[in-house]
Amino acid sequence: MGTEERDSISGVHTENIKEVSAGGIVFRKDGSTWQVLMVKNRRGSWTFPKGRVEDGETLEQTAIREVEEETGIKAKIVRYAGSVSYVYHKDDGMTVDKKVHFFIMKYISGIPTPDGVENIAVRWVDLHRVKDYMAYENLWKVYLDAMFSVVGGDDDL
Image 1 (cartoon, rainbow, N blue to C red):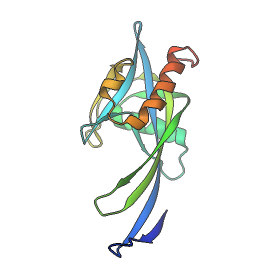
Image 2: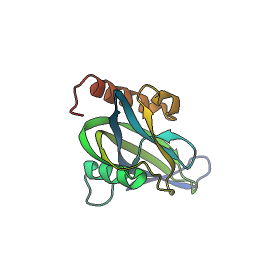
Image 3: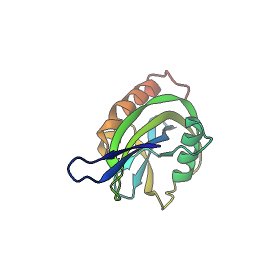
Image 4: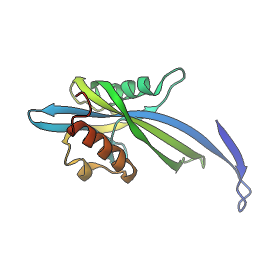
């Protein structure tokens, strides 16, 4: 659902589209080392798995579905981690106002496998090296809050 506007310079109609997505910051412990699941998207940027909420889905259902579809990993939600909002422009000139909700998730099973459509790589990253991979600065605070909660023992992982 969007709002239609007319660009004051070109006179062209533009439409702002609102999108809501959800995803997961999936943690697992490998021996004594905490790891986080990351995906490399088609543009070559490393991030966390996420995707649009489908009709009738809750944010939690979307996060679980997207993590599994994009990575082959089954995970369960521990708690809400936070959200990021941003605006981007589609090739057709549409402006999208997007909000992405993230959940702290616990690894259950599976082998990281990229879906080959939205993501070209999936890997477990040592939680202290996530900053080296993360392409989007707006995710950093959400990740840090999640990491400190997990490492501090506040979450049941």
